[in-house]
Length: 134
Image (cartoon, rainbow, N blue to C red; front, side):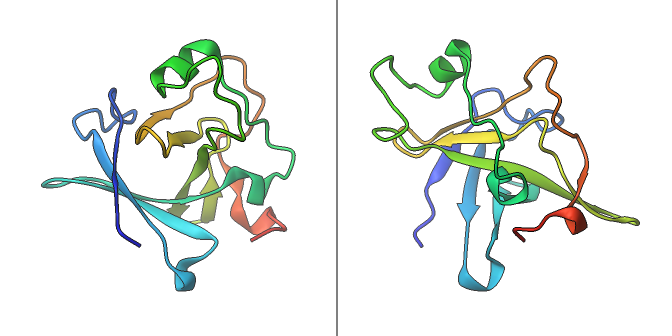
């Protein structure tokens, strides 16, 4: 895979200074991928499609989020398929997935955002060991 740089105009929360990332994939890493920041001391994150963890995961964008991803009103999920990622955290008690604040990337414009929906009932730390699709 030839890596393409994804631009996060606001950065990611806690890592606002890093705005350029590459999504790295590979057969031996499936179903995970790496969201690798570009530059000195850039962060890297393990991520997974949230629908692998929760098949009914709501992939919905507010109009403001569509604008941040440079999607037009005419863009549909078929004409502008988006990459949805949930960030994985590994700690002493195991791995968890943040389903509350997914990362969404528009591969057509190479723009990305991390959503922070108000009032989301999705878990902030879903135990990866509880997931069936992994």
